[in-house]
Length: 491
Image 1 (tube, rainbow, N blue to C red):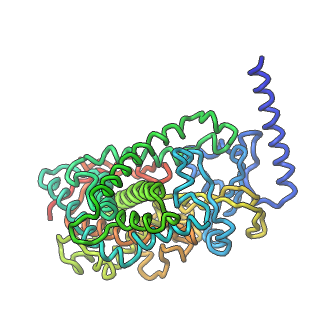
Image 2: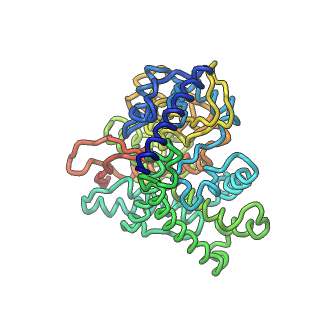
Image 3: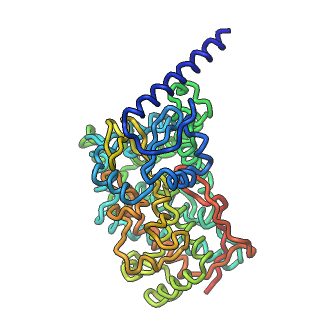
């Protein structure tokens, strides 16, 4: 009887909330959208690939669309023009974050640069990240590290080419990305570049991405917070705990050993620990650990996924691979790994990367934003506390912007000024505005070098002549549903 009373009371409360929301929406001019059902709103319309279902709904309701997902107002942006309005013209009003309940695991949202509000702590962490890791001078100084990791990847592929074995492209790229980051931060490999010892860490990172990207009832019905009905926060706590234990051990090891003596240069962890000693109010041990967690989770999966999609498109469209290889042979010389200095002389390769990111943006909704107050956009009211999705996946496939948008055609960028650094809103794989991805300067160096080296050092074919599968699976990032296994063929 007590349970029945609680249930009926809860149902009555939800119905009352639904009625109040309907009355509130009638008094303001909200963006158009599907009529919500009682209690669940439009949750039933999302499906397991919400980037696609929301793109389809936008064709009916328009590029600025409002849905109610459970108890939460959600505004979805599906055009370059409105993305510019939100991410540039009214960037500050849209700069807060929607915090998924999963990110309450280990209180990550309180320390992570991704989730912190734009305020003093966020600015000091962003400054530390930009100056110590992603500044041009720091990237130039670490170029030899990246070059060595690419050479190790090529050596791994060469070994497979001699035995005729297929390479799991995403996993091999993940090992390269992981060791690149671990060398930049800690001056050491976290995994053997010639074996599959990174599998556990890759599974951990993908576990984080899946849990953070999974539709969570708690996010739509916040009163379920204590229950965690799907166990998402509990599983995220386990994943984060394992990664934080690993990172904490590496930091303790550095504190005990002191600076690496290899070449006298300070690595990122050394600089951050020194800054922490000198200015503990600017950055402390817990912020350093959580910054490293952000870097390893965001920097490995997005890079390896982009490289896997690029190689899949190269195999799907042999003519584009042929053009990229011809340019590489002419500029660099057949069979050689390429250097970062070569990228400027390889326009087709740069276009190839842009086209991959147009069709396969690593984070299809970017990271959701939130408005603290009512904001007017294009004559509509985005209501206070709404979460805001920018559907970069749909914007990159918009037929009003791109001709034959589903066709993989790097040539479309050859005579185009469109870039992906947050100024051209038809191509925003890294976001835009003050919340733009801080890792962009590293990604635009790393992805072309790895891709160009793989294409220039081998010919490639799909394992066992299988049909190429381009199905997607969604966590926070958009990965291939089935790993790309391709055989490198000696030149």
